[in-house]
Image (cartoon, rainbow, N blue to C red; front, side, top):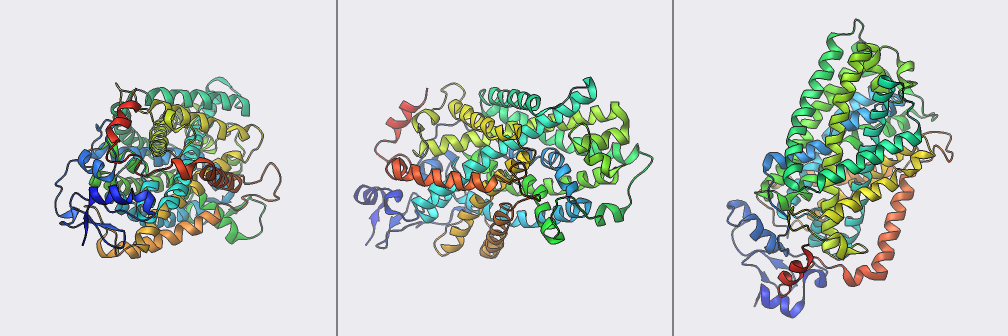
Length: 541
């Protein structure tokens, strides 16, 4: 005997109360074991429901504006990955931790592994396309506590990404001002530029998802054209280029560590940091049409195109190095700027720096959008202190404005240690990696664990889903440990890797808030059938 789903909910509560995964569909039923299964044809046979109808089926009343198409959804993840941000801002780090050989071969290897992670995440996203993304998927597949801790890790990673991207843009802006006006990019001046960039991105995100989507679409072409222009100029103009043995074989260890293997592993941070943020497609799924397919395709396409573009960019930069030591010790504070200067002269260097800076601004704007949607969704489910404030949606723009301001405010605080520590920027990027990357793996792991019950969406990996998922989870476990390790020796207050401290702090905060309020307030889905409309009518302002 089985109970109709509404009656079962009335008697037994919500999936969050059961502490078991829920697989919802319009013709579902509750089995004696307490699980909800689909009893109709699989969703991948036909798309028979509208996006909003399926979102309601997952338990949420649509309140965000669905104005983003398939290309726009791909564009936001491509913009967040942003090879002109990640590769360029950490290029100096790569010169020290392994040099050209680790950068080039590491990029190829990490790209392959990230494609496995992206494939596993895309499959789960197709089944659960919500703004909460990773934590909602984890909660549905594993229960409340899985969702709770996944959400906090995802939030840490997204906020760390805003800080890493926008602080990198501030560094490049300082380098441009140095070439143009003799500006000295001190830590304090760089922080002022950083805060101005954060304010710009907050302002752009207050106007609604339509503007964000347009800017992301422009960003795709800007990135592709920018890589072509930079590599083309560096290939044609300089009279001297490094040979292939230098680009693919030169190993450099300026970290202070004696182990070459250790340096190679730490050097993978450049690629792994750049290949993050593609969950943006999932976070914007409630604002995307045909979300069950578009969000998943957006993840995969963003990784693939970034893999190709990033390899071309790194090769172009490295072939054009004129003086390795001078590039590392550049007065601009940004080694790629020195490469441009040596290879093209001041005018050419400034022109290419502007190309990079604009790309980084596109990237930071896209990441702000993704992070604010995570703040909104997590607050909608009662997970954050002051959730009632952060989940509010502006009635005219359909944008969670308060969530935008919270995202950029926390990002501003994360960059404060850069005023005192020369390794703080690398720590910020590590915060992004070790926060967001484990969050990618948790729903994939739960999909593997519950593979006999997981009902895939229209975009799925078929019989390869479990195998790909196992590879993805193993890789994530590896890089999570790796990027908690110290990156320079000797380990001092200035060189200490603060990323593990941030990870422990956020997990302690998550545990403490769970004990204080989360166990009582956290509810996924956040509303029940009989009060959904009343609650959200009150939340829209």
